[in-house]
Amino acid sequence: MNIVYGVSGEGLGHVYEAIQVITRLTHEGHTVKVITYGDRACRSLAEFQPMRVEGVHLYFDSKGMSLSQTVRKNLRCFPYFLRHWRRLKRELVAFEPDVFITAYEPFSMVASHLLRTPLISMDNQNEILHVEAPPGTSLPALWLVKLATRACTYGARYYIIKSLTKPCTDKPNIRFVSPVIQDAIRFLRPTQGDHVLVYLTKPNPELIEVLKSIDETFIVYCGNPEGTDRNILYRAQGENYLPDLGACKAIIATTGFSLISDSIFLKKPYLGAPLRRQFEQSYNASFIRQLGIGDFSESITKADIERFLGNLAGYRSQLELYHLDPSEQEETLLALIHEIGAREHRPAFVS
Image (cartoon, one colour):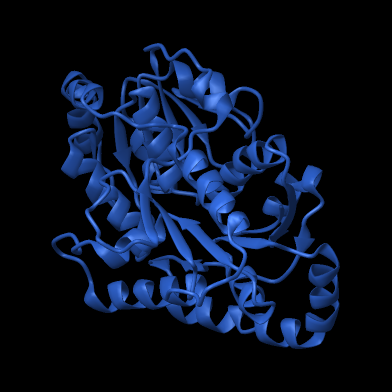
């Protein structure tokens, strides 16, 4: 089948997942056309020659995610698609798609409906529509996230929802699945070394100063220049990352879904530093504490880190109780694609 795969370019979690899934789809004989946006996503997906479009980015100020900046700066998307729609449509029609997949990429959702082609939504954000909000949740932030999620994934025939809790549902078009784990992570043989891996998607100078005050070795990935500063070794993303991840004794990081999933698979305790005023990060952080595999704080202190490192044995015990099927998402997607391909007609979309 010819499959259009829309990949969110905000962050790299969806991108790394897409590389794993596209490789599996092509191995199964499907042809995949990728749609994405943003420089990092386009570079990472370059081998698949993606169609580049405009997409939604999040913007931050000193207090965290800025809603006003995010709304204002993303308004550029509308004139872009008005100018380029005919060209984009011609390219998609020439590809003759049988099914669209959207990984929280809104243009692929819109295009699937305009071309009357079945859509599969595959993300973790849709879980928010099916669970109760954690205590202390900002209701306006929750409503905004729900609105954005419905807008990005509207009208999919099937929803594959990556979840670490898998809530019950009686809706036949929804599948809760374990998140896919990349082969590179699956093949690691994790050990418990002496260092703590720190992964930050945005600079956090306050946390860096706290790390310098603790008698531990920290390997930090945050786009910093490579080098050493007392007990901190800065590294750029590259060939050292996976060995550092596999050999660390614990992780301190922003609370993206993909890294949390990798940490559970590798049995690594996790201290979350969620990005401020970003609901998904706060939601993921609350899960870390709920499951007992680590803790979190928006403003991590020395006491937070020392308490976390003092309880690694307890977190590891909880991690041993958690089973994550790294292939479930891929197998579910392949089954639904087969089901769509086997039908002689296309029933109405289920919203």
